[in-house]
Structures are given as structure tokens and as C-alpha cells.
Image (cartoon, rainbow, N blue to C red; front, side, top):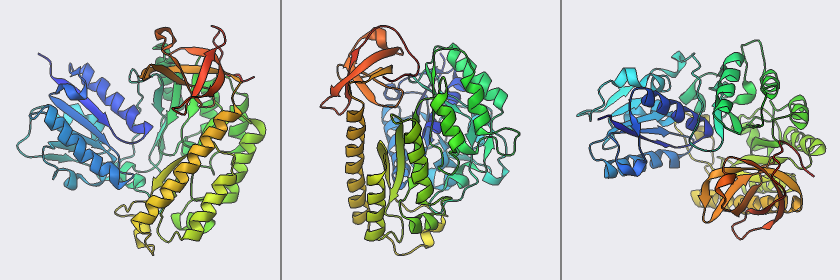
Length: 440
């Protein structure tokens, strides 16, 4: 009887693409994938280490896996594994820890998939990792996350990602296109381009991120593409112009801000000032008024005073953006931010997070209201929310409708009618004609 395997992914879209790739490696080796709670022989936990909470969650996932299958082989991969393998092997039940390079050599390294009497660590120095390993998700959800870039040459003072993933490196343009064609051939209707710093794509190669998205846009078929998070200093007006007139790229940008105060941005070692960020937002909205713009922001960074925070709050409040991802600053080992004083009390960090979270909810609702009575194309998801099927418009408005199995993974033209108690937009089917990129 074949061994069973289950997976749990913490963190970003990039991690999901890599877990899916590891899953395919196990499938080719004869393992049977089972649901997490069904008690697998092997558990692969792909970790994040952006915040302290992610580290704690890893411990909890290990405990849950052992509850379902006490004799399971527990394998930990991902950023936390690269950064703190010695800490991870102290978690009861962990058997094998694999670093950034080793996770893709997992089957060769482990071979014997039996419970260990003593945990093993297989982690290379991050400086040794120069090779790009491609990855993409498929079959896990309606959209596919396609990895195009890895690592980062930026050294923001709060961030451990360069320590966990190494220097910036990119897939070849030819291989990205080949993977995209394969994904689309499986019936996937939406691809999300992912990486650590995707605007840096093509660095040290003979092509750029703009070259790549232009080539992807030339592919045939009825599909959509989203750009995941892209740094404001790398999101050029030329890229924005291209998205505005493209066949397949959606009017949706997620642009990290981190702080709306220039003093704090400088201490964070970000590569722009808030004036540049505002210019990007204003330009997007000038040529795509219906575009969705998401913002990452960190609260409670060391030395952030009440005045600094209120400056950020007011700056974001006046920006024409659609939603926020709010992160409470947490101390990370081996980052420059640890030397910045004074430290913001944790209770104050939580208060600032709540304030921006409420602002985000107001921003999202206002954005939704601006789009009511307009016609969009919605790609409906596999997952149900209660009795509703949900999906997203081109500009990332979450739409709900009564469940219809024929709508799953379909592009459906709908009129946005109102906002539901759940905070989604209620859609009404306009007709059965699928469209790819229009708003009226």
C-alpha cells in the first residue's frame, strides 16, 4: 500500500506555488495525497517567518498533525526552516528540517519516510543558493500561482526574507511561458505571477518584467493574469500603461507602502518616499479609474511615534486605494530594526493595527459602492461560503451569488447590485456570455 502525505502551507502565494510543486514530486513517487485531518504517514509543513505569529503557528500545526497521526514523519520546509532549523528541531515530533535549496531535493535527501528517533537538519548556507527552481500551483484552487522570481537584493531593516531566500534570481522567459501554457491547458482561468520581488524579474538577464508580461499577454485563450505584490519604485508608468490596454492583465495592483511617513520609510530602508507612492496611485487611477489598489502597511515599527502613525493614517486616508493589509511589527532576529529605539509598546501596536484595519474596511466598502450597478466579469471559485458561490471581478471585487455548480471556474458576466451582510457584493447574471476584461 502506498504511503499517504498531507501538506500545510503558511504565508504567501509563493509558498503555495512551492507546496504544490512539492506535492507533484510526491505524487510522481507514488504517494497518495490525503486531507490533513485524515491522518497521513507524512506531513510536509511549509513555513513562513515574516512575523512571530507565523513561527508560533508552525508549532501548532505540528501538534495538530501528531494528533491526527502520532507516528507520522513530520517534515518542515520554508523560510522559518532556513532561518532557525535548530529552533525547529526542539518542537516535539519534528523529524526533518530542510532549507531553501533542500526542499526541492526532498525525495533524494530523505528516502526513508519513517519516523525518526532523532531529528535531522539539512540546511545549506543561504549565500550558496544561486539556482532558481520553478514552481506553480495547480488543482488546489481556481487560480494558479506561478513563480517567476525568488530572493531579494533589497535589505529592508525589518525583513528576514533575503536571509531566508537569498539573492534575487529569475526564471527564464521561455520557461515561464512554457509553464503558463501548461497551466492554461489544464483549464485554469487565472494565473497570479508570484515571487519575492517580482518587479526585479530579469535582473542579470537580458529581459525585464515588462518584457515578460508583454509575452504572456500574447498567449491565446480566455484567461486572466494578476500581478502580485510589486514594489512602488519598480512599478513604472510603462507597466501601468501596458496593463491598462492589455488583453489578459487585470486592473489590480498590490503595492507595498509599509509607512506613509518619510522618516520611518528611511529607517525601514525602503527605496522610495511617499511622494513617489502617491504618484503611482494617482497615475493608475487617472487611466484606470476602476482599478483596485491594495496596500501593505506596518504599524509599530521601532521609533514610530504617535505623530508618525497619524501621518501615515492621514496619508492613506487621502489616497484613492481599495484595501489594506495591516501588519503589526514584530521583532525578527538578525535585522537592523532591532537596533532602532525606542521600541513601541505592544498594546500601542495593536491599537494602531485596529485603527488601520477599520480604515481598510471603510476603503473597501467605498470602493465596492463606487462600482455598484456596473457590469463585470466574475471568475467563480471552487469553495463555498455558506450557501453562496463567490468569485472576483477583474478589479478584485468579491461577488457572491446563490450556489450554482455550473458557475465553478467559469467567467460569468454579472451586474453588481448591492452589498451583502457579509460585506461582499451581490451579483446578478446579466447573460451567459463570458467576457475577459470589460467594464460598463
